[in-house]
Amino acid sequence: MSNKDCPDYCSSRALAYGRQTSAIRSLFEYGKQKSREVGCECVYDFSIGNPSVPPPRQVDEAFHCLLEEHDALKLHGYTSAPGDPAVRRAIADQLNRDYGIGCDETNLYLTCGAAAALSSTFRALTLCDQNNEFIVLAPYFPEYPFFVEGHGAHLIVVPPKLPDFGISIEGLEQAITSSTRAVIINSPNNPSGRLYKENELLELADLLSRKAQEYGHPIYIVSDEPYRELVYDGLKTPFIPLLYHNTIVCYSYSKTLSMPGERIGYVLVPPRADHAKDLYDAVAGAARSLGYVCAPSLIQRVVGLCTDVKPDLAQYDKNRTALYDGLSNAGYRCIKPEGAFYLFVEAPGGDAQAFSDFARLNYNLLIVPSESFGCPGYLRISYCVSHERIVSSLPLFEECLKAYRGR
Image (cartoon, rainbow, N blue to C red; front, side, top):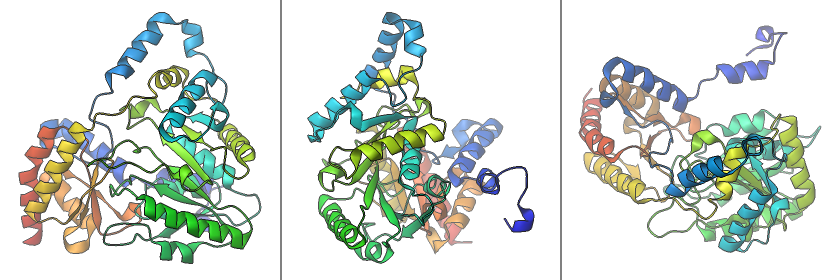
């Protein structure tokens, strides 16, 4: 938007953000409209990461228990801004059991999902009257630029290490400057399904430690972890604060407990992080300035009763295998996902938008082009759908590829 187009009645940046469409959401809304026209059985919507596996039974039991046994005014009233202390203690206990991190409730700030956790963290780390840079590894979640740049900071993108979409230590070393505030890590990764391994993360930790010493200030890792428990083939997600003490964790229960619409997550500022108390207070202040009064009180208490509940991955794994094998056999080049519930596919012909449009208009296959993920030339296919939809879509994917190549 040029200066002459900037309005004098609202924020030009907010206006631009409001008018900039999300490729994921646009396809999702298109799918709903198209389903009303031709029937949902004729539309194959692989656009959005909406869990298809029902919440674990413990979640439903927690809702019923709370609604039946507790005082309604207390249950639906405000909690402390950082969250109910008992819930935070329960989460801290779970983290200590699983990882031995040595945290307590004073290290946890409950938020309306990972989005609020990330936005509050980026704002807390953005220094006044300075150039602030956050580095992200591509491919990345498309909302990161809004979360970072909305606070006046700059997002610096480092391409992945190909062909396996690993961490490019060389690219990071070139990108880090004295203005670098943090590196954003999303593992398992949306959209690639890549799980960063411990040896890669230790290399990253060594690099950041050296650069922090060189520039005379901490360089944090902001670890975005909504898919922490969604890993396959016996793999485990490394808990980054154990490898690099200057790590801030932003977590969401949306995928683990299959309740993304309930909007519940947290920021963890580990006790060993440099300036941990100041950082925590800055996160609290950032959340306050953004108008986050407290996370939903009922949902806080639900997760407080479900901290040790893990997702059932059998359905996702079944879908992962069927989709990967089916598309690979049809002639697509796919990155086999190690976690999350997305398949990253090389765009036939190299133009992801063109193939996405062709698949949508001719076959009602809704797949997301990767330009907004900072990694052009790929397609994201979300396999958190019913297994029947995966199986019935495979002939269409095969036909679509043949037709596209034969144009």
